[in-house]
Amino acid sequence: MISLSSAAINEIRRLKSKQPANILFRLRVKSGGCADWFYDLSFDTTVQPTDQIVEFDDIRLVIDPGSLNYINGLSLDYAEDLMGGGFRFHNPQAVSRCSCGNSFSISP
Image (cartoon, rainbow, N blue to C red):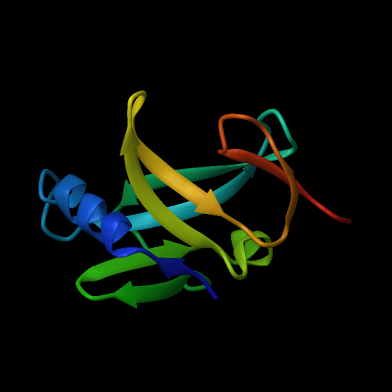
């Protein structure tokens, strides 16, 4: 399915610590961006009956069924560089990505 690096887990924990206790971390794939699809990370308090929940230590990652097809095998990392910090997406299904790394396309 997907994996989170320890750096990504630590950053999600840091961000989550500023949110209400019952908050969930949601990963979505939405249409748009420079290369057809983009990743959307957000906090959410609701889980739909069709959502998939993946647990990494104390992090509950919620994924809607429409996004699952686009992120199978995804590795989510977090890194800081001279331009600042950010999540990095490594998706084996992506056949191309835009330069920002958040937008991608897959084969039909």
